[in-house]
Length: 595
Image (cartoon, rainbow, N blue to C red; front, top):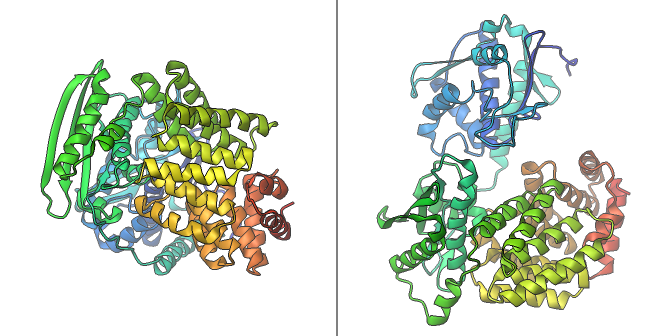
Protein backbone atom coordinates (compact mmCIF):
# COMPACT_ATOMS: atom_id res chain seq x y z
CA UNK A 1 0.00 0.00 0.00
CA UNK A 2 1.17 3.55 -0.67
CA UNK A 3 0.15 6.87 0.77
CA UNK A 4 -1.82 9.20 -1.43
CA UNK A 5 0.82 10.91 -3.54
CA UNK A 6 1.12 14.59 -4.25
CA UNK A 7 3.08 14.46 -7.52
CA UNK A 8 2.18 17.17 -10.06
CA UNK A 9 1.61 14.54 -12.78
CA UNK A 10 -0.31 11.33 -12.12
CA UNK A 11 -1.14 8.58 -14.63
CA UNK A 12 -4.10 6.63 -13.26
CA UNK A 13 -4.43 3.22 -14.98
CA UNK A 14 -7.52 2.40 -12.90
CA UNK A 15 -9.72 5.09 -14.44
CA UNK A 16 -7.42 5.88 -17.39
CA UNK A 17 -7.03 9.51 -16.44
CA UNK A 18 -4.01 11.79 -16.62
CA UNK A 19 -3.81 14.49 -13.95
CA UNK A 20 -1.51 17.49 -14.43
CA UNK A 21 -1.33 20.16 -11.74
CA UNK A 22 1.73 22.39 -12.08
CA UNK A 23 1.22 25.47 -9.95
CA UNK A 24 0.79 28.74 -11.82
CA UNK A 25 1.33 26.93 -15.15
CA UNK A 26 -1.30 24.35 -16.05
CA UNK A 27 -4.04 22.29 -14.39
CA UNK A 28 -5.74 19.55 -16.41
CA UNK A 29 -7.63 16.31 -15.95
CA UNK A 30 -7.71 14.22 -19.13
CA UNK A 31 -9.89 11.13 -19.56
CA UNK A 32 -8.75 8.48 -22.06
CA UNK A 33 -12.20 6.97 -22.43
CA UNK A 34 -12.15 4.57 -25.39
CA UNK A 35 -10.08 1.46 -26.24
CA UNK A 36 -7.77 3.38 -28.55
CA UNK A 37 -7.39 6.18 -26.01
CA UNK A 38 -6.71 3.75 -23.15
CA UNK A 39 -3.98 2.17 -25.26
CA UNK A 40 -2.19 5.48 -25.73
CA UNK A 41 -2.37 6.42 -22.04
CA UNK A 42 -0.93 2.98 -21.22
CA UNK A 43 1.84 3.73 -23.72
CA UNK A 44 2.64 6.97 -21.88
CA UNK A 45 2.76 5.01 -18.61
CA UNK A 46 5.12 2.49 -20.23
CA UNK A 47 7.49 5.26 -21.39
CA UNK A 48 7.46 6.82 -17.92
CA UNK A 49 8.16 3.47 -16.29
CA UNK A 50 11.10 2.85 -18.62
CA UNK A 51 12.51 6.29 -17.85
CA UNK A 52 12.23 5.57 -14.14
CA UNK A 53 14.10 2.29 -14.61
CA UNK A 54 16.88 4.15 -16.44
CA UNK A 55 16.86 6.92 -13.86
CA UNK A 56 16.66 9.74 -16.42
CA UNK A 57 14.24 11.54 -18.69
CA UNK A 58 15.09 10.18 -22.12
CA UNK A 59 13.58 8.77 -25.30
CA UNK A 60 12.60 5.10 -25.22
CA UNK A 61 12.98 2.84 -28.30
CA UNK A 62 9.81 0.84 -28.87
CA UNK A 63 10.87 -1.91 -31.26
CA UNK A 64 12.67 -3.89 -28.56
CA UNK A 65 9.46 -3.83 -26.50
CA UNK A 66 7.11 -4.69 -29.35
CA UNK A 67 5.62 -7.85 -27.81
CA UNK A 68 4.73 -5.97 -24.63
CA UNK A 69 3.15 -3.14 -26.63
CA UNK A 70 1.18 -5.66 -28.71
CA UNK A 71 -0.15 -7.17 -25.45
CA UNK A 72 -1.35 -3.76 -24.27
CA UNK A 73 -2.91 -3.03 -27.66
CA UNK A 74 -4.78 -6.34 -27.82
CA UNK A 75 -6.15 -6.04 -24.28
CA UNK A 76 -6.95 -2.53 -23.07
CA UNK A 77 -6.85 -1.27 -26.65
CA UNK A 78 -9.09 -4.00 -28.09
CA UNK A 79 -6.68 -3.98 -31.06
CA UNK A 80 -7.73 -0.38 -31.74
CA UNK A 81 -4.11 0.82 -31.87
CA UNK A 82 -3.68 -1.04 -35.16
CA UNK A 83 -5.35 -3.90 -36.91
CA UNK A 84 -2.04 -5.60 -37.64
CA UNK A 85 1.03 -6.15 -35.51
CA UNK A 86 3.46 -5.03 -38.23
CA UNK A 87 1.62 -1.70 -38.55
CA UNK A 88 1.53 -0.95 -34.85
CA UNK A 89 4.76 1.05 -34.50
CA UNK A 90 4.19 3.28 -37.56
CA UNK A 91 0.70 4.01 -36.30
CA UNK A 92 1.98 4.87 -32.84
CA UNK A 93 4.49 7.21 -34.47
CA UNK A 94 1.79 9.04 -36.40
CA UNK A 95 -0.50 9.34 -33.39
CA UNK A 96 2.29 10.56 -31.10
CA UNK A 97 3.43 13.06 -33.70
CA UNK A 98 0.08 14.39 -34.84
CA UNK A 99 -2.54 13.69 -32.19
CA UNK A 100 -1.23 13.39 -28.65
CA UNK A 101 0.33 16.88 -28.54
CA UNK A 102 -2.91 18.44 -29.79
CA UNK A 103 -4.41 19.66 -26.53
CA UNK A 104 -7.00 21.99 -27.96
CA UNK A 105 -8.80 19.61 -30.31
CA UNK A 106 -8.27 16.63 -27.95
CA UNK A 107 -8.53 13.77 -30.48
CA UNK A 108 -7.29 11.14 -28.02
CA UNK A 109 -8.76 12.24 -24.72
CA UNK A 110 -11.57 14.23 -23.18
CA UNK A 111 -10.67 17.31 -21.21
CA UNK A 112 -12.63 17.11 -17.95
CA UNK A 113 -13.79 20.25 -16.20
CA UNK A 114 -13.76 22.45 -19.30
CA UNK A 115 -16.45 22.89 -21.90
CA UNK A 116 -15.88 23.22 -25.60
CA UNK A 117 -16.62 26.57 -27.15
CA UNK A 118 -19.52 25.05 -29.08
CA UNK A 119 -21.17 21.65 -29.10
CA UNK A 120 -18.98 18.54 -29.09
CA UNK A 121 -17.40 17.68 -32.42
CA UNK A 122 -14.05 17.19 -34.06
CA UNK A 123 -14.15 20.70 -35.54
CA UNK A 124 -14.68 22.33 -32.11
CA UNK A 125 -11.95 23.40 -29.74
CA UNK A 126 -11.47 23.85 -26.02
CA UNK A 127 -10.37 27.25 -24.78
CA UNK A 128 -6.76 27.36 -23.52
CA UNK A 129 -4.19 30.09 -23.18
CA UNK A 130 -1.20 30.07 -25.50
CA UNK A 131 1.03 29.33 -22.49
CA UNK A 132 -1.05 26.25 -21.61
CA UNK A 133 -0.91 24.98 -25.18
CA UNK A 134 2.86 25.49 -25.34
CA UNK A 135 3.41 23.63 -22.05
CA UNK A 136 1.27 20.74 -23.28
CA UNK A 137 3.05 20.48 -26.62
CA UNK A 138 6.39 20.37 -24.81
CA UNK A 139 5.40 17.18 -23.01
CA UNK A 140 5.73 15.06 -26.14
CA UNK A 141 8.83 14.28 -28.13
CA UNK A 142 9.25 11.72 -30.91
CA UNK A 143 12.35 10.58 -32.75
CA UNK A 144 13.29 8.15 -35.46
CA UNK A 145 10.83 6.99 -38.09
CA UNK A 146 7.62 5.06 -38.25
CA UNK A 147 9.56 1.79 -38.03
CA UNK A 148 12.09 2.84 -35.39
CA UNK A 149 10.14 5.27 -33.29
CA UNK A 150 11.54 6.48 -29.96
CA UNK A 151 9.17 8.22 -27.55
CA UNK A 152 9.77 10.57 -24.65
CA UNK A 153 7.45 12.10 -22.07
CA UNK A 154 9.38 15.34 -21.77
CA UNK A 155 8.62 16.50 -18.23
CA UNK A 156 12.12 17.99 -18.04
CA UNK A 157 10.96 20.69 -20.47
CA UNK A 158 8.43 21.75 -17.84
CA UNK A 159 11.06 21.94 -15.13
CA UNK A 160 10.01 18.66 -13.51
CA UNK A 161 11.91 15.52 -12.55
CA UNK A 162 10.99 11.83 -12.54
CA UNK A 163 10.02 12.16 -8.87
CA UNK A 164 7.27 14.55 -9.92
CA UNK A 165 5.35 11.92 -11.88
CA UNK A 166 3.54 8.81 -10.62
CA UNK A 167 2.00 5.79 -12.34
CA UNK A 168 -0.96 4.43 -10.34
CA UNK A 169 -2.74 1.08 -10.52
CA UNK A 170 -4.97 -0.39 -7.81
CA UNK A 171 -3.21 0.59 -4.55
CA UNK A 172 0.26 0.53 -6.09
CA UNK A 173 2.41 3.14 -7.78
CA UNK A 174 5.29 3.46 -10.23
CA UNK A 175 7.20 0.25 -11.08
CA UNK A 176 5.05 -1.95 -8.87
CA UNK A 177 1.89 -0.41 -10.34
CA UNK A 178 3.11 -1.04 -13.90
CA UNK A 179 3.98 -4.68 -13.14
CA UNK A 180 0.58 -5.27 -11.53
CA UNK A 181 -1.09 -3.65 -14.53
CA UNK A 182 0.82 -5.91 -16.93
CA UNK A 183 0.00 -8.97 -14.84
CA UNK A 184 -3.70 -8.15 -15.09
CA UNK A 185 -3.40 -7.92 -18.88
CA UNK A 186 -1.59 -11.26 -19.12
CA UNK A 187 -4.23 -12.87 -16.93
CA UNK A 188 -6.93 -11.46 -19.20
CA UNK A 189 -5.27 -13.07 -22.23
CA UNK A 190 -4.82 -16.41 -20.48
CA UNK A 191 -8.46 -16.50 -19.40
CA UNK A 192 -9.86 -15.25 -22.71
CA UNK A 193 -12.01 -17.73 -24.62
CA UNK A 194 -10.61 -19.13 -27.83
CA UNK A 195 -11.54 -17.23 -30.95
CA UNK A 196 -14.66 -18.56 -32.59
CA UNK A 197 -14.42 -19.25 -36.32
CA UNK A 198 -17.81 -18.49 -37.83
CA UNK A 199 -18.76 -20.84 -40.69
CA UNK A 200 -19.95 -19.29 -43.93
CA UNK A 201 -23.72 -19.47 -44.47
CA UNK A 202 -25.07 -21.60 -47.32
CA UNK A 203 -26.26 -18.50 -49.20
CA UNK A 204 -24.59 -15.25 -50.30
CA UNK A 205 -23.30 -13.54 -47.16
CA UNK A 206 -22.30 -9.90 -46.88
CA UNK A 207 -21.17 -7.25 -44.41
CA UNK A 208 -21.95 -3.64 -45.33
CA UNK A 209 -19.39 -1.35 -43.71
CA UNK A 210 -20.33 2.18 -42.67
CA UNK A 211 -19.64 4.48 -45.59
CA UNK A 212 -16.83 6.97 -44.99
CA UNK A 213 -17.87 10.60 -44.68
CA UNK A 214 -15.49 12.50 -46.98
CA UNK A 215 -17.21 15.85 -46.38
CA UNK A 216 -15.60 18.62 -44.36
CA UNK A 217 -18.59 18.66 -42.01
CA UNK A 218 -18.63 15.79 -39.47
CA UNK A 219 -22.40 16.27 -39.15
CA UNK A 220 -22.71 14.64 -42.57
CA UNK A 221 -21.84 11.32 -40.88
CA UNK A 222 -25.55 10.69 -40.70
CA UNK A 223 -25.89 10.85 -44.47
CA UNK A 224 -23.06 8.33 -44.90
CA UNK A 225 -24.44 6.12 -42.13
CA UNK A 226 -27.90 6.25 -43.62
CA UNK A 227 -26.71 4.97 -46.97
CA UNK A 228 -25.19 1.85 -45.40
CA UNK A 229 -28.19 1.48 -43.09
CA UNK A 230 -30.69 1.46 -45.94
CA UNK A 231 -28.69 -1.09 -47.94
CA UNK A 232 -28.51 -3.37 -44.88
CA UNK A 233 -32.25 -3.00 -44.29
CA UNK A 234 -33.07 -3.76 -47.92
CA UNK A 235 -30.90 -6.90 -47.95
CA UNK A 236 -32.25 -8.13 -44.61
CA UNK A 237 -35.74 -8.31 -46.12
CA UNK A 238 -34.60 -11.16 -48.37
CA UNK A 239 -34.59 -14.76 -47.19
CA UNK A 240 -31.93 -15.80 -49.72
CA UNK A 241 -29.27 -13.30 -48.58
CA UNK A 242 -27.36 -13.31 -45.27
CA UNK A 243 -26.46 -9.77 -44.15
CA UNK A 244 -24.71 -8.75 -40.94
CA UNK A 245 -26.66 -6.34 -38.72
CA UNK A 246 -25.83 -2.67 -38.51
CA UNK A 247 -24.81 -2.69 -34.85
CA UNK A 248 -22.00 -5.13 -35.64
CA UNK A 249 -20.64 -3.69 -38.89
CA UNK A 250 -20.74 -0.16 -37.47
CA UNK A 251 -18.19 -1.16 -34.81
CA UNK A 252 -15.66 -0.70 -37.63
CA UNK A 253 -16.63 2.93 -38.12
CA UNK A 254 -13.60 5.20 -38.23
CA UNK A 255 -11.15 2.27 -38.27
CA UNK A 256 -8.78 1.24 -41.02
CA UNK A 257 -9.47 -2.46 -41.47
CA UNK A 258 -8.88 -4.89 -44.30
CA UNK A 259 -11.79 -6.54 -46.05
CA UNK A 260 -10.40 -9.97 -45.14
CA UNK A 261 -10.42 -9.10 -41.44
CA UNK A 262 -14.04 -7.97 -41.55
CA UNK A 263 -15.08 -11.09 -43.47
CA UNK A 264 -13.32 -13.37 -40.99
CA UNK A 265 -14.68 -11.64 -37.88
CA UNK A 266 -18.24 -11.41 -39.21
CA UNK A 267 -18.27 -14.82 -40.92
CA UNK A 268 -19.18 -13.63 -44.42
CA UNK A 269 -17.73 -13.90 -47.92
CA UNK A 270 -18.48 -10.45 -49.35
CA UNK A 271 -17.86 -6.94 -48.01
CA UNK A 272 -19.36 -3.71 -49.32
CA UNK A 273 -17.58 -0.44 -48.54
CA UNK A 274 -17.80 3.08 -49.89
CA UNK A 275 -17.69 6.80 -49.25
CA UNK A 276 -19.94 9.86 -49.37
CA UNK A 277 -18.94 13.46 -50.05
CA UNK A 278 -21.58 16.19 -49.76
CA UNK A 279 -20.83 19.52 -51.41
CA UNK A 280 -23.69 21.93 -50.88
CA UNK A 281 -26.72 20.37 -52.57
CA UNK A 282 -24.57 17.89 -54.49
CA UNK A 283 -23.36 14.48 -53.38
CA UNK A 284 -20.70 12.07 -54.64
CA UNK A 285 -20.99 8.42 -53.61
CA UNK A 286 -18.67 5.51 -54.30
CA UNK A 287 -19.32 1.83 -53.55
CA UNK A 288 -17.13 -1.27 -53.94
CA UNK A 289 -18.09 -4.90 -53.42
CA UNK A 290 -15.20 -7.29 -52.71
CA UNK A 291 -15.04 -11.09 -52.55
CA UNK A 292 -12.93 -11.54 -49.42
CA UNK A 293 -12.01 -15.14 -50.28
CA UNK A 294 -10.38 -14.22 -53.57
CA UNK A 295 -9.68 -10.53 -53.02
CA UNK A 296 -11.41 -9.75 -56.32
CA UNK A 297 -13.60 -6.69 -56.76
CA UNK A 298 -17.06 -7.63 -58.01
CA UNK A 299 -18.50 -4.15 -58.31
CA UNK A 300 -17.20 -0.58 -58.30
CA UNK A 301 -19.60 2.31 -58.81
CA UNK A 302 -19.45 6.08 -58.52
CA UNK A 303 -22.47 8.39 -58.45
CA UNK A 304 -22.76 12.15 -58.59
CA UNK A 305 -25.98 14.10 -58.29
CA UNK A 306 -28.30 16.13 -56.08
CA UNK A 307 -28.67 15.17 -52.43
CA UNK A 308 -32.37 14.62 -53.03
CA UNK A 309 -31.39 11.71 -55.31
CA UNK A 310 -29.75 9.79 -52.44
CA UNK A 311 -32.70 7.39 -52.09
CA UNK A 312 -32.47 6.39 -55.76
CA UNK A 313 -28.72 5.90 -55.37
CA UNK A 314 -29.29 3.61 -52.38
CA UNK A 315 -31.64 1.45 -54.42
CA UNK A 316 -29.25 1.33 -57.37
CA UNK A 317 -26.33 0.23 -55.17
CA UNK A 318 -28.52 -2.48 -53.64
CA UNK A 319 -29.62 -3.73 -57.08
CA UNK A 320 -26.01 -3.88 -58.31
CA UNK A 321 -24.97 -5.80 -55.17
CA UNK A 322 -27.73 -8.36 -55.72
CA UNK A 323 -26.80 -8.63 -59.39
CA UNK A 324 -23.14 -9.21 -58.48
CA UNK A 325 -24.16 -11.90 -55.99
CA UNK A 326 -26.48 -13.44 -58.63
CA UNK A 327 -29.52 -13.10 -56.39
CA UNK A 328 -32.82 -13.07 -58.27
CA UNK A 329 -35.86 -11.41 -56.74
CA UNK A 330 -39.49 -12.31 -57.08
CA UNK A 331 -41.92 -9.49 -57.82
CA UNK A 332 -43.07 -9.44 -54.20
CA UNK A 333 -39.53 -9.40 -52.84
CA UNK A 334 -38.61 -6.54 -55.14
CA UNK A 335 -41.57 -4.47 -54.00
CA UNK A 336 -40.80 -5.11 -50.34
CA UNK A 337 -37.05 -4.56 -50.70
CA UNK A 338 -37.31 -1.21 -52.45
CA UNK A 339 -40.34 0.17 -50.64
CA UNK A 340 -39.78 3.88 -50.10
CA UNK A 341 -39.89 4.69 -46.38
CA UNK A 342 -40.04 8.50 -46.70
CA UNK A 343 -39.36 11.08 -49.36
CA UNK A 344 -38.34 13.68 -46.80
CA UNK A 345 -34.55 13.66 -46.50
CA UNK A 346 -34.54 15.85 -43.38
CA UNK A 347 -36.98 13.53 -41.58
CA UNK A 348 -34.91 10.54 -42.64
CA UNK A 349 -31.68 12.04 -41.23
CA UNK A 350 -33.39 12.94 -37.96
CA UNK A 351 -34.50 9.32 -37.55
CA UNK A 352 -30.93 8.15 -38.13
CA UNK A 353 -29.73 10.51 -35.42
CA UNK A 354 -32.51 9.34 -33.12
CA UNK A 355 -31.33 5.74 -33.60
CA UNK A 356 -27.78 6.69 -32.61
CA UNK A 357 -28.96 8.54 -29.52
CA UNK A 358 -31.28 5.73 -28.44
CA UNK A 359 -28.43 3.23 -28.57
CA UNK A 360 -26.40 5.29 -26.05
CA UNK A 361 -29.22 4.52 -23.62
CA UNK A 362 -29.07 7.11 -20.87
CA UNK A 363 -31.63 9.74 -19.85
CA UNK A 364 -29.96 12.57 -21.75
CA UNK A 365 -29.49 10.64 -24.99
CA UNK A 366 -33.04 9.25 -24.89
CA UNK A 367 -34.45 12.75 -24.40
CA UNK A 368 -32.56 13.84 -27.51
CA UNK A 369 -33.75 10.75 -29.43
CA UNK A 370 -37.36 11.54 -28.46
CA UNK A 371 -37.01 15.11 -29.68
CA UNK A 372 -35.51 14.03 -33.01
CA UNK A 373 -38.20 11.40 -33.62
CA UNK A 374 -40.95 13.91 -32.85
CA UNK A 375 -39.37 16.40 -35.26
CA UNK A 376 -39.24 13.70 -37.96
CA UNK A 377 -42.96 12.96 -37.49
CA UNK A 378 -43.73 16.67 -37.79
CA UNK A 379 -41.84 16.74 -41.09
CA UNK A 380 -43.51 13.54 -42.36
CA UNK A 381 -46.61 12.43 -40.40
CA UNK A 382 -46.78 9.23 -42.48
CA UNK A 383 -43.24 8.09 -41.64
CA UNK A 384 -43.68 4.68 -39.95
CA UNK A 385 -40.06 4.36 -38.83
CA UNK A 386 -40.24 7.69 -36.98
CA UNK A 387 -43.39 6.51 -35.13
CA UNK A 388 -41.65 3.22 -34.28
CA UNK A 389 -38.54 4.92 -32.92
CA UNK A 390 -40.56 7.41 -30.87
CA UNK A 391 -42.54 4.53 -29.35
CA UNK A 392 -39.33 2.63 -28.56
CA UNK A 393 -37.68 5.71 -27.05
CA UNK A 394 -40.63 6.30 -24.74
CA UNK A 395 -40.51 2.60 -23.81
CA UNK A 396 -36.79 2.93 -23.01
CA UNK A 397 -37.37 6.04 -20.91
CA UNK A 398 -40.05 4.25 -18.89
CA UNK A 399 -37.58 1.41 -18.24
CA UNK A 400 -35.07 3.94 -16.94
CA UNK A 401 -37.66 5.41 -14.56
CA UNK A 402 -37.81 8.83 -16.24
CA UNK A 403 -41.54 9.45 -15.77
CA UNK A 404 -43.73 9.86 -12.69
CA UNK A 405 -46.73 8.50 -14.62
CA UNK A 406 -45.25 5.70 -16.75
CA UNK A 407 -48.63 4.19 -17.70
CA UNK A 408 -49.70 7.38 -19.46
CA UNK A 409 -46.41 7.45 -21.38
CA UNK A 410 -46.79 3.78 -22.31
CA UNK A 411 -50.32 4.47 -23.53
CA UNK A 412 -48.90 7.03 -25.93
CA UNK A 413 -46.10 4.64 -26.98
CA UNK A 414 -48.67 1.90 -27.67
CA UNK A 415 -50.67 4.23 -29.88
CA UNK A 416 -47.54 5.23 -31.79
CA UNK A 417 -46.58 1.57 -32.33
CA UNK A 418 -50.07 0.69 -33.58
CA UNK A 419 -49.91 3.69 -35.91
CA UNK A 420 -46.52 2.51 -37.23
CA UNK A 421 -47.93 -0.95 -38.06
CA UNK A 422 -50.93 0.64 -39.78
CA UNK A 423 -48.65 2.88 -41.82
CA UNK A 424 -46.25 0.10 -42.84
CA UNK A 425 -46.91 -3.53 -42.01
CA UNK A 426 -43.81 -4.66 -43.95
CA UNK A 427 -41.42 -2.77 -41.63
CA UNK A 428 -39.85 -4.95 -38.93
CA UNK A 429 -39.33 -2.00 -36.59
CA UNK A 430 -43.10 -1.33 -36.51
CA UNK A 431 -43.74 -4.83 -35.12
CA UNK A 432 -40.73 -4.72 -32.81
CA UNK A 433 -42.08 -1.53 -31.23
CA UNK A 434 -45.57 -2.98 -30.91
CA UNK A 435 -44.22 -6.18 -29.36
CA UNK A 436 -42.11 -4.48 -26.69
CA UNK A 437 -44.74 -1.90 -25.74
CA UNK A 438 -47.50 -4.55 -25.66
CA UNK A 439 -45.40 -6.44 -23.18
CA UNK A 440 -44.90 -3.52 -20.80
CA UNK A 441 -48.17 -1.61 -21.22
CA UNK A 442 -50.73 -4.33 -21.87
CA UNK A 443 -48.93 -7.24 -20.18
CA UNK A 444 -50.05 -9.12 -23.28
CA UNK A 445 -47.28 -11.64 -23.81
CA UNK A 446 -49.11 -13.48 -26.60
CA UNK A 447 -49.54 -10.28 -28.61
CA UNK A 448 -45.91 -9.33 -27.96
CA UNK A 449 -44.67 -12.72 -29.19
CA UNK A 450 -46.89 -12.54 -32.28
CA UNK A 451 -45.58 -9.06 -33.09
CA UNK A 452 -41.93 -10.18 -32.84
CA UNK A 453 -42.69 -13.20 -35.02
CA UNK A 454 -44.25 -10.88 -37.58
CA UNK A 455 -41.09 -8.73 -37.55
CA UNK A 456 -39.06 -11.79 -38.53
CA UNK A 457 -41.60 -12.80 -41.17
CA UNK A 458 -41.38 -9.44 -42.98
CA UNK A 459 -37.61 -9.17 -42.47
CA UNK A 460 -36.05 -12.67 -42.30
CA UNK A 461 -32.55 -11.27 -41.82
CA UNK A 462 -33.45 -9.00 -38.91
CA UNK A 463 -31.09 -9.58 -35.99
CA UNK A 464 -33.25 -7.13 -34.02
CA UNK A 465 -36.31 -9.28 -34.68
CA UNK A 466 -34.66 -12.44 -33.37
CA UNK A 467 -33.15 -10.61 -30.38
CA UNK A 468 -36.47 -9.04 -29.40
CA UNK A 469 -38.33 -12.34 -29.79
CA UNK A 470 -35.77 -13.99 -27.54
CA UNK A 471 -36.21 -11.25 -24.94
CA UNK A 472 -40.01 -11.45 -25.00
CA UNK A 473 -39.87 -15.23 -24.56
CA UNK A 474 -37.59 -14.71 -21.55
CA UNK A 475 -40.13 -12.35 -19.99
CA UNK A 476 -42.90 -14.81 -20.79
CA UNK A 477 -41.06 -17.47 -18.81
CA UNK A 478 -40.31 -19.60 -21.90
CA UNK A 479 -36.58 -19.60 -21.22
CA UNK A 480 -35.51 -22.67 -23.15
CA UNK A 481 -37.39 -21.51 -26.26
CA UNK A 482 -35.61 -18.16 -26.18
CA UNK A 483 -32.05 -19.46 -26.50
CA UNK A 484 -32.19 -20.57 -30.19
CA UNK A 485 -33.52 -17.13 -31.19
CA UNK A 486 -30.63 -15.46 -29.42
CA UNK A 487 -28.23 -17.73 -31.28
CA UNK A 488 -29.73 -16.58 -34.58
CA UNK A 489 -29.49 -12.95 -33.48
CA UNK A 490 -25.84 -13.39 -32.46
CA UNK A 491 -24.95 -14.99 -35.79
CA UNK A 492 -26.51 -12.11 -37.70
CA UNK A 493 -24.83 -9.71 -35.29
CA UNK A 494 -21.56 -11.23 -33.98
CA UNK A 495 -21.12 -8.14 -31.81
CA UNK A 496 -24.58 -8.18 -30.23
CA UNK A 497 -26.41 -5.42 -28.40
CA UNK A 498 -25.81 -5.50 -24.63
CA UNK A 499 -29.53 -5.72 -23.90
CA UNK A 500 -29.73 -9.06 -25.73
CA UNK A 501 -26.89 -10.33 -23.57
CA UNK A 502 -28.54 -9.00 -20.40
CA UNK A 503 -31.80 -10.74 -21.19
CA UNK A 504 -30.09 -13.99 -22.19
CA UNK A 505 -28.18 -13.90 -18.89
CA UNK A 506 -31.45 -13.40 -17.00
CA UNK A 507 -32.79 -16.50 -18.78
CA UNK A 508 -29.74 -18.51 -17.71
CA UNK A 509 -30.30 -17.30 -14.14
CA UNK A 510 -33.94 -18.41 -14.27
CA UNK A 511 -33.00 -21.97 -15.32
CA UNK A 512 -30.17 -22.18 -12.78
CA UNK A 513 -27.22 -21.90 -15.19
CA UNK A 514 -25.53 -19.27 -13.03
CA UNK A 515 -22.00 -19.62 -14.34
CA UNK A 516 -23.17 -19.07 -17.92
CA UNK A 517 -24.96 -15.92 -16.78
CA UNK A 518 -21.98 -14.68 -14.76
CA UNK A 519 -19.61 -15.16 -17.70
CA UNK A 520 -21.86 -13.07 -19.96
CA UNK A 521 -22.48 -10.35 -17.39
CA UNK A 522 -18.83 -9.95 -16.38
CA UNK A 523 -17.98 -9.36 -20.03
CA UNK A 524 -20.63 -6.64 -20.30
CA UNK A 525 -19.66 -5.00 -17.00
CA UNK A 526 -16.04 -4.82 -18.09
CA UNK A 527 -16.97 -3.01 -21.30
CA UNK A 528 -19.72 -0.88 -19.72
CA UNK A 529 -18.70 -0.38 -16.09
CA UNK A 530 -21.22 2.43 -15.52
CA UNK A 531 -24.34 0.54 -16.60
CA UNK A 532 -26.59 -0.48 -13.69
CA UNK A 533 -28.23 -3.49 -15.32
CA UNK A 534 -25.30 -5.92 -15.64
CA UNK A 535 -24.16 -5.24 -12.07
CA UNK A 536 -27.72 -5.80 -10.83
CA UNK A 537 -28.01 -9.15 -12.58
CA UNK A 538 -24.51 -10.13 -11.46
CA UNK A 539 -25.52 -9.47 -7.85
CA UNK A 540 -28.57 -11.68 -8.41
CA UNK A 541 -26.58 -14.51 -10.00
CA UNK A 542 -23.95 -14.42 -7.26
CA UNK A 543 -26.56 -14.60 -4.49
CA UNK A 544 -28.35 -17.53 -6.12
CA UNK A 545 -25.07 -19.38 -6.65
CA UNK A 546 -24.03 -18.87 -3.01
CA UNK A 547 -21.34 -16.25 -3.64
CA UNK A 548 -22.74 -13.53 -1.38
CA UNK A 549 -19.44 -11.66 -0.93
CA UNK A 550 -19.19 -11.21 -4.69
CA UNK A 551 -22.87 -10.20 -4.72
CA UNK A 552 -22.24 -7.42 -2.19
CA UNK A 553 -19.39 -6.07 -4.34
CA UNK A 554 -21.74 -5.86 -7.30
CA UNK A 555 -24.39 -4.22 -5.13
CA UNK A 556 -21.81 -1.59 -4.18
CA UNK A 557 -21.21 -0.96 -7.88
CA UNK A 558 -24.95 -0.53 -8.44
CA UNK A 559 -25.14 2.10 -5.67
CA UNK A 560 -22.02 3.82 -6.98
CA UNK A 561 -23.76 4.31 -10.31
CA UNK A 562 -27.24 5.01 -8.88
CA UNK A 563 -27.29 5.87 -5.14
CA UNK A 564 -31.11 5.87 -5.20
CA UNK A 565 -31.43 2.40 -6.73
CA UNK A 566 -34.43 0.41 -5.55
CA UNK A 567 -34.55 -3.34 -6.10
CA UNK A 568 -38.34 -3.34 -5.74
CA UNK A 569 -38.77 -0.65 -8.41
CA UNK A 570 -36.29 -2.40 -10.66
CA UNK A 571 -38.16 -5.70 -10.38
CA UNK A 572 -41.53 -4.04 -10.99
CA UNK A 573 -40.25 -2.49 -14.22
CA UNK A 574 -39.16 -5.94 -15.44
CA UNK A 575 -42.17 -7.32 -17.36
CA UNK A 576 -41.93 -10.92 -16.19
CA UNK A 577 -45.12 -12.95 -16.58
CA UNK A 578 -44.23 -15.16 -13.63
CA UNK A 579 -44.69 -13.32 -10.32
CA UNK A 580 -42.33 -15.80 -8.69
CA UNK A 581 -39.54 -14.59 -11.00
CA UNK A 582 -40.12 -11.03 -9.75
CA UNK A 583 -40.24 -12.13 -6.10
CA UNK A 584 -37.04 -14.16 -6.48
CA UNK A 585 -35.31 -11.16 -8.06
CA UNK A 586 -36.33 -8.84 -5.21
CA UNK A 587 -35.26 -11.41 -2.60
CA UNK A 588 -31.84 -11.92 -4.22
CA UNK A 589 -31.20 -8.19 -4.47
CA UNK A 590 -32.08 -7.73 -0.79
CA UNK A 591 -29.61 -10.44 0.18
CA UNK A 592 -26.99 -8.62 -1.85
CA UNK A 593 -27.69 -5.44 0.14
CA UNK A 594 -30.02 -3.61 -2.25
CA UNK A 595 -33.37 -2.46 -0.86
